[in-house]
Image 1 (tube, rainbow, N blue to C red):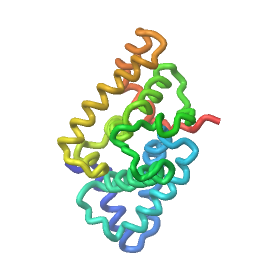
Image 2 (cartoon, one colour; image 1 turned 45 degrees about the vertical axis):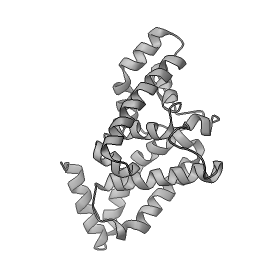
Image 3 (cartoon, one colour; image 1 turned 90 degrees about the vertical axis):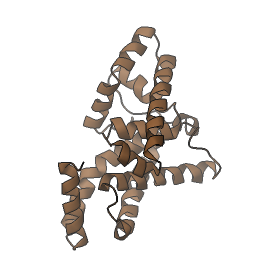
Image 4 (cartoon, rainbow, N blue to C red; image 1 turned 30 degrees about the horizontal axis):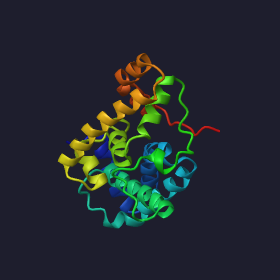
Length: 209
């Protein structure tokens, strides 16, 4: 079911295609923070370049967008392809993003600023699970994308997305238990996962200096 934001996106797209540049700027302004969140816990300092590449690719491919899904699913599909290109350019074409984690790809990334220990554990644990599962969970919890939208973004059947969300939650729980200094901290982090996800959504986290 289309949301009010989806309807606004459709109207902005129509105006943009008709030559209203301000409508395109409104779309980019609306989705800058979501795209920034998408990259920031995965690629560190490379996020600014990938954000720019994503919006440029969106602009270049816009004439081919047929409206099969929402605009944000289309934009996140571009962002995910840019992320995969980035990793494969650095690590080689044979890299398996279904099994390798963001931490394994780049352990030097310090992560995002977290004001609470539970949040720090939550963000670090996301980077410990396979990248495709991390992406699916972040789109679902951070961006509140539907299963259908995630399926379009990752070019997967909806049933596969549901399986990955389930598997991702299980592996995330295990990573939290492994990284937490105590069982009590792990329990607080696990019990508050949706709270930490909302906190990330509500604030555009800045990279640590």
